[in-house]
Image (tube, rainbow, N blue to C red; front, side, top):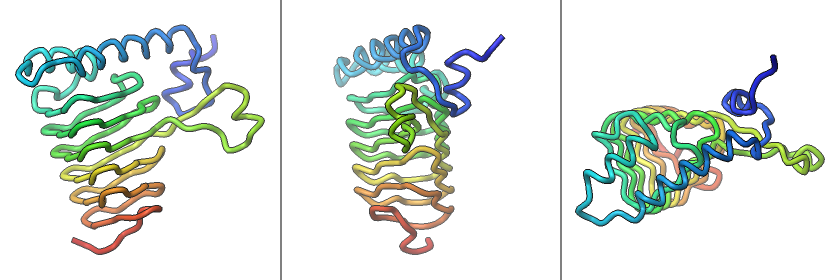
Length: 185
């Protein structure tokens, strides 16, 4: 028996995003993050309950400010003490590994989803993705975009507005479009 579209997606292969299982899972995630985004400032327990269903791990120590958006939720593996400020987006068609003590400023976007560069393949309707790994004690400045397949090392700071298209090592300050190492810390 062949692989399911979900299995192909999680492996980073070309998958059909209109597969009924994937559509249902995205719909479930959208319902949950929409409920989360409608919570009031003092409804912290309600937020944690919704996040537990959406994301699963380490939500007890997470601080995620609405609005928050994602594709599936279950591919986001939170470390302890993760903070996401307002209006963050994680397109998690593949795993997103987030280390402990991550700080994400407003409008941070983390993408695992991508499309083929070849127009014929892109127009086929199939998509693909690549895992993102972010280490411990990382600070992502406002409006950062983390592209598919990127790894960011421990203790690194990414400057506001950066577009991270390639791996960034540990213990550095990096910024720009494309993002590059500015200095060691």
